[in-house]
Amino acid sequence: MSNDQAPVLISSLAAGHPAVVFEQVKAYNKAVSDCRHVLHVNNDTVRLGFFDKARAAGIDFGSFGNLTINPTHLFTRRPTFLGAHVLNVEFAMRAGIPFGHVYLHTDADLPFRPGLGEHIRRHDLGLAPSRPVGAGTPRDEAFLAHTDLQKMLEKIGGRFWTIRYEGFFATRAIFYELFFFLMAHIPFDHDNFWRGDYPYEEYLLPTAVEVLHAKNNWRRTRNAVLTANSAPGFNLASRQPIGIEDCARLATLPEDVFAIKFIPDDMASPVRQWIRGQMGYAI
Image (cartoon, rainbow, N blue to C red; front, side, top):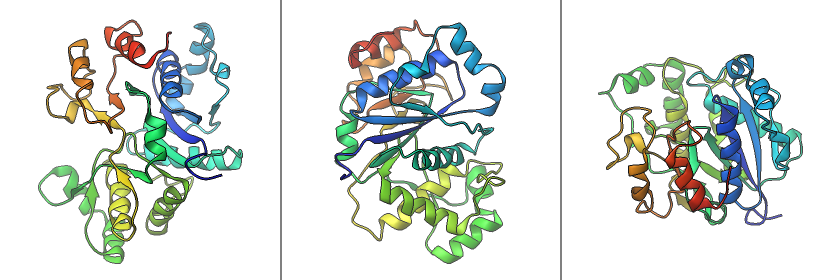
């Protein structure tokens, strides 16, 4: 089965309320035709009663015929998110879940435009051009000072790159190439999920993409999720959800942006109601 005919594997990370996750799966099922979800639920979230809360609220994740919950529950404190995504893809492979592309995101976004599945299948890779890393910001300097990463840089040449990667996607083959490239340089096993005191994933994945993309002729576009807090025109504080006044701006975003982050947790919020109208589903 070719990539443009195979399902899209959506790797999701959950650390919030079950109702938020349930709606997100429903929304992505509208946005991505023929997809399969593997959901990783944070260890703390499980311990605090995620599944009990879902049952008490009458939320049935089993009602989705295309959703599988990963039985492994990591503590996904930053920067373990990327490690949890790797485990989701490994789980999908072991379970025999078919897929031609992999899409990575967390429970903080919602798609507001249909057609994401077709967009993904038209491309090999979705990650916006990255920013070169250099001295000047505390986070960059901490990353550059890491011994293992310096050894990696010596081997691969060039420089490190960074960018937010929510809504990253790639063909199955390119995903494997990127992550085997990273694992060859930075140890990854059940005792080392690329942990650190700064967000590895926002450096490691963009660096692998830039190094390998330079050697290949991949059909590349940007990642599908826009983080509004760091985007021009939204004027939001860090992690502040968008408001209903921001929804009109969503329609003016470039056509390769399909989802927005952050969304209010309130299930009755006008923002969620607006998105439901755009996507054609109800809760």
